[in-house]
Length: 215
Image 1 (cartoon, helix red, strand yellow):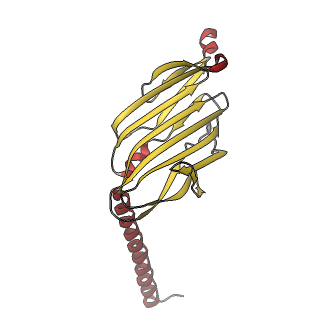
Image 2 (cartoon, rainbow, N blue to C red):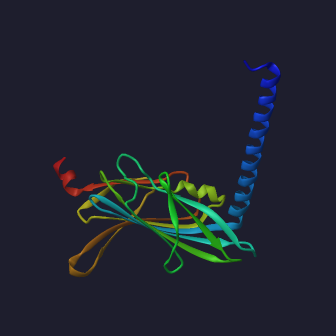
Image 3 (tube, one colour):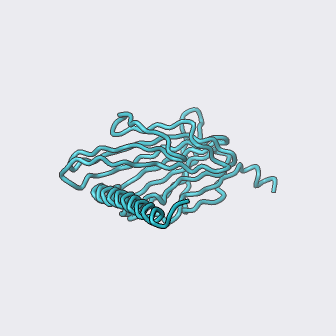
């Protein structure tokens, strides 16, 4: 049976260990925060192509190193995964004009590291494809707040099949119709935002026009 003296000594050691862990965690968080404040995530362009069974996303992000020193910054890119959207079966991450970036899966996200030269402007492009269970899609926008600054500009577009119509969208969109070779008609919806700190993710739904006619 543990005596009172031994029990007290054990609790003191445990408390000291927990304090050390919390201290190291706090130091790491402070260092990470300082790095994030040195990098300005100032623009993004998100192009989504929705089909009957898949959702293709082409996302381009723009960053600037505000300092005169090299910075390495760990980052994550989360995916919307739910009963309707699967974890992407295709993921590609490149920087600049196509240099591949190593990444690893971390839950419903990918984890990678960005390296910045002094005052560098950097472009990162993430493309991925998800299986779609229904005509409902989503793109996560609210992680912008982790950069502690609003986007200077965000451009977002959604392409749907020509026989479909938008049912709803978190953000109001403008509709355009364009024609390509061989009579291929593309229906795009888009919206743009400036000084944008999203408080909601972008959720949208669409349906074949025939469903309206049946109703």
